[in-house]
Amino acid sequence: MNDEPENRLEVSISAEVEMGQYANFASVWHTQDGFVLDFAVITRPPQLANDPSSGQHFVSVPTRIVSRIRIPPSQVFELMKALEQQLTQYEQETGHKH
Image (cartoon, rainbow, N blue to C red; front, side, top):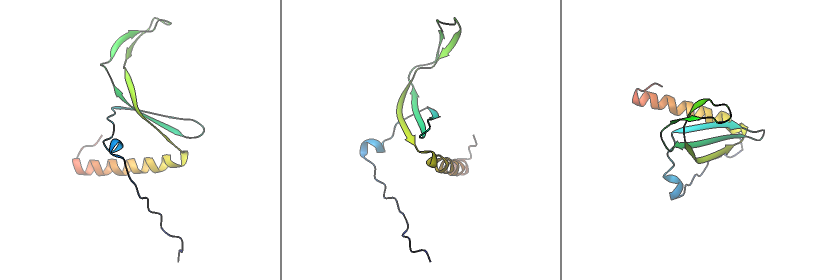
């Protein structure tokens, strides 16, 4: 018999955070200490631009970071599992497979 009590998170959220932020772009990168998830919104339509140093043309996509989340490496696996579970449930409910 396990005498250790069960952990139960008691999650609360402020009204400002509860509304969430719209993001249509995400970037994931890491440092030695953890992973960083930048969520962004595209602010204007993409447009052709010119790189002055190389003369090459490229498509510029203006974005603004709306939220930056930093997580420890140990949480990345839990996040990936949760995303997979939610995506599977979403696909079952909506019939959409991406």
